[in-house]
Length: 332
Image 1: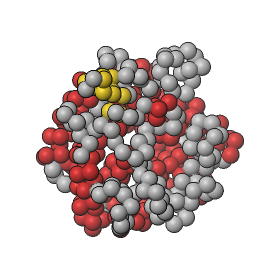
Image 2: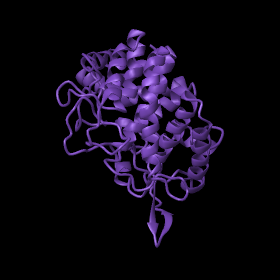
Image 3: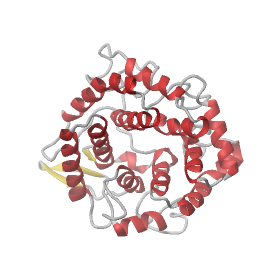
Image 4: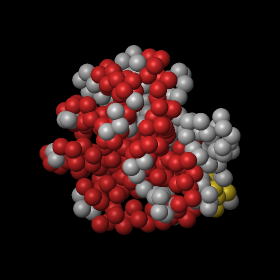
């Protein structure tokens, strides 16, 4: 664990020079979603969030100039995407990060600055709600995980809708908005009714002759999103949580467990898994999973990676989040 902690520190050090960045070599630019995890790492390593403040302030000071659809936030800023590309999911991650930043710092000024942008973002997503309140046919680069899960993001993508639920719950808490809370609870009920098949949550539904039909495709990443967002809990889905904790993980495929369920990747499915283990105080399981997921990276490069393999960057800012779990659980 100490080797992993040192790798997390090194990863953070090289990706927080001025604002949070992706990696030192490929992209010296700041991406939302990654920043949710790096913000936690900054607190764990420094007891403050000054770099995160600069990162979030940049996003809030972004002026659209018709580059993006009204209400959407940039996926990466400061950066230049003249083709107008954006990741709708990253806007949801911004709202989740905003709440955690506020809880760590009590910065009411930044929260006040964010309110109009947060509600404009919600307004953007309302345009994609179908008759069930589910987001359908989202525009842009819909991103869930660097795994097979991202091959099934058209139509109704349930992991994206799980994030939408989490975003609405944050809006309800940050701005004391009962309307958002009601919308979130209704969405949660619909997701559980339509996505959960009695064993797993399905990733996707598409239209067949006008009817919304699940494709039957199920991934590990989708289960991780379900527990991370609170759509599912250990109490509401007892058997699935047991499978999640004891059957899923790094060595699942090698051991022949649920081979029909494609595994998640480091960004971000595996980190969602680890965070769920942390949330429910499963410290022993968290420690063992961290060793399986990260030790080979730390020993190889002294840093933590974007993917389980070497195809992505081998020094990725979000991965410094390992320091957060180590500090919170005191497992060093």
